[in-house]
Length: 344
Image (cartoon, one colour):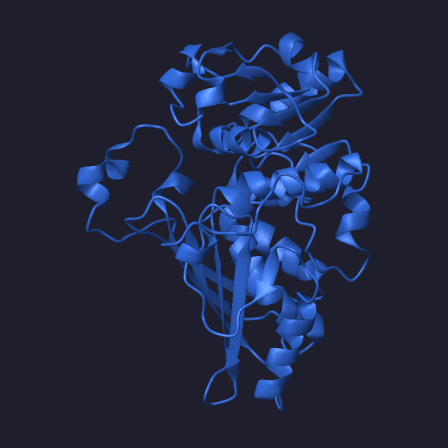
């Protein structure tokens, strides 16, 4: 039985959409911070759950489940998960928020402020690390932290070069176009259709975006030194999708074949992160738990450009969570997930 906290939001709703297609997971309690009434009033596309009533974020109710998936703002899930674990230490939890992602409390303090929570197993099975295998860490893990969507796109774009030794990870420059669903469901003036349509809106510029320490953490695990990371996201007038264009300095003597070999081999055999022979677009990943990655050596031979596209709500959030949950439960990794997009 899987309960979902934050069921009225975008991330929680996406988790429910995927759970409805999962043959081994039954949906339990549906909880939200302030939203009440039938779920259909808030998530009309989830017709099979339309009559289910939303309850409050009561740790007693949520703890009476085998699995709890939390789609809450940062800072909220850390407190709630501690209360749930106190009631039921055996519950399995997956946090879609940021609270349990960062290994270093100083990183949390620098980008989020107070309230660092203990890190959980990171829900990126494809994470390349020099000290082990991420799937082994997820197997049997009862506490799982889903990755950030932007962090996933940049990590997938950069880690093959770092892991293969053709880049140190220094001086990486990443520019992303991001769909508005990544900003959440809260009503804010800059998220209104009248502000978004026909507009490209940069945000969290100048090294302030909260996914920066997560990206750097990931690339250090892959063997990078990470002397610097420039990261600039831009809200684009689309609902879903991320395209990350990442420029990475390469070590002298790196060839075009070295770049292709590094990226092809990094994702060879992966069910959901795949090499694309041409620069991918976002449309082919929408609705799928798929990330597509392409990389090419720049003409001068001093940098490479890697492009990654994914659906921010699926492979960027809820899909990654379900994929990791499958591993933790000993189920086939692909269960309940699709790699087929809905383009056009």
